[in-house]
Length: 205
Length: 205
Image 1 (spheres, each protein chain N blue to C red):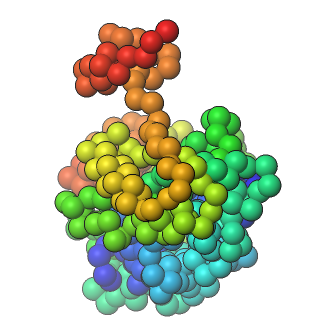
Image 2: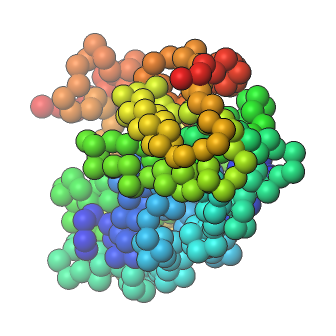
């Protein structure tokens, strides 16, 4: 009996569930036993959904967002403004911005941000493909929407400088999403760094 | 685009992950995207572990514990005391008692407890198979180790009465684990020392 489980098959399934981030061994066992209570068809649907995703998913060849086809629905949409590209870290960020309903341009998913501590350099993320897009698409404005962390700022800084090197007839416009107090928050409960930045970055009325 | 996900394949995988108890939609997305970062081989191992478990697992034909073979390691062990059977609700409870190292008999996994609120009656759990065992195995003592809840007590009471109806030359001894356990708690979450003492200090009914 490996570990304290009565079955090698159970052990393997629990170990696999346990590889998911934030799922401890006890939770993994609970989830696996819950799966085991289902019909074989349901377990098959559960298992195959992940393998199908891995095998059949595409990364949009323009923006690198996840997609069922070679070009994602946003890049292939006729109603999106193709002159704006919003640079984000990952797929979830695209979804977060889409949920706001406030943006109608395109995206560029970096697939990470520059983080020397984690061994992620500029060559590990989709920067050169953005340079390529700028050369080949009617892009006028780049909006950086990266995390407001040191890594996020470093990445914005790096890409900004890199894109300035691209020879162009008409220069690109660069911006980054506004930083300041969250809407609906009290000053009293806003962290000092954010509040301090909000004062420095005040906008005229 | 169904929901707010950019891909139908992603949507399906997230929906499947979301069926697991305690895994919300946001967590499901995070887990699926983490899976997607792995090699295809790893995703295959992940997915197939659950399907293999479902297809190949056995329920021990004596005690109904999960097992890789027709008879579980406990029932087939020569060193276990085959005169004692500990009646538990589920597989986790067997593991919990095994971890205490205080019990050397056999088990009987009911696969649930009587709970009219959830529509679970005596016919839905492994009671008649226990009656059958008593007729066919050299069992002398039945130890009830069910949750210290109304449903657990009801189940103990029901099975006790049912087993008293079985004609025997030598009467069975009945006990239940000592109520050192905090009332209202589940076996699975009871600390090992308390649970171990509760088995040693079992009281006859």
